[in-house]
Length: 97
Image (cartoon, rainbow, N blue to C red; front, side, top):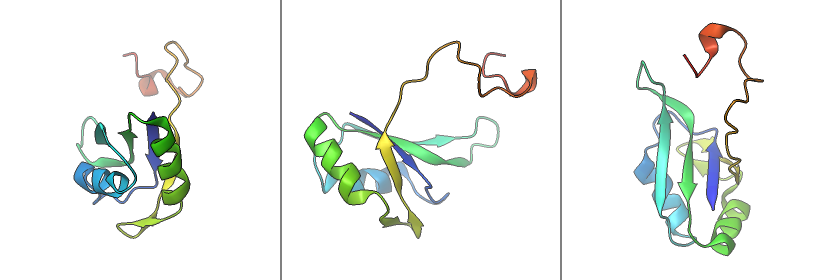
């Protein structure tokens, strides 16, 4: 299961995220999303856990808990639907340029 992790501190690393989730089961991957140009954290990331039961338990137990001084906001990640431009405000905001 892929887990969306929001409200992350800009100091949080992928290793920090992995460590928090490993206490609840196997973690296949943990990653922080960075801004393309500035290479600064965008304040969110994803954790992939192969066991759905462990992942659901981790979401329940970690949601709202502090990590690097910020309350984690966790939920099952939703797939990005290609062609969905409802979030695009102007052509400059488009991810398709």
